Length: 234
Image (cartoon, rainbow, N blue to C red; front, side):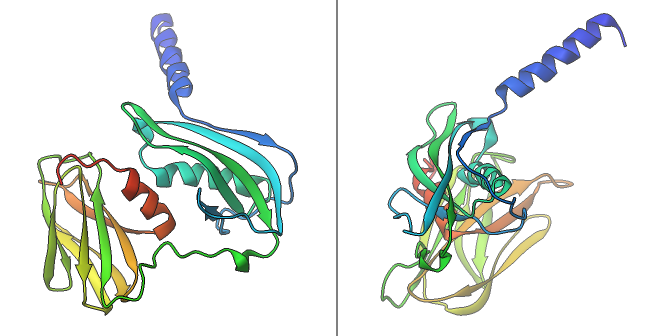
């Protein structure tokens, strides 16, 4: 490898590292690391901290647009919490994406002794006879390609690039949400009245026109992604 090429490669690596968003943490105390598959509860701005909580540290994250979603940010923070034995994170500040900046969040890493007191009610909408499916697709691969989203044998919307919508449905019970272009993607879902669901749609490279990708997102994550998502083509 030539000297010039080595210098250029080194510059690219340094630039990539410098641009890579990091979770900045201040650790006060740590325990045995949690398994990467262990659950880390998310307490949002409006959620109270359980009395049995111990603050292990604080974190902040300054994301970039290229890093993608709130879900990705929380995934990074969860990993940091697991490293020090934490089982919950509490968001104390959140600024949504603006321009080229991604999610800016800060909060605390907690160890909660009694996690049964953590109420995860982000999917409840009240005593009604319908459910709500919140559907969103970020700007990304295949911006000119749209596809129909089905609930069972019913088309519930046409998913375009940079798009979000909410659909009321009364078809409860076991069902599937699916879409097809050159191939079909399908996710099973049990619809219950009085609850809301979050479906993240995207498109991945295919042989000809791309393939739909559908994800049923945890309501705690989906609620925040959906709220901050500024869709231009609703």
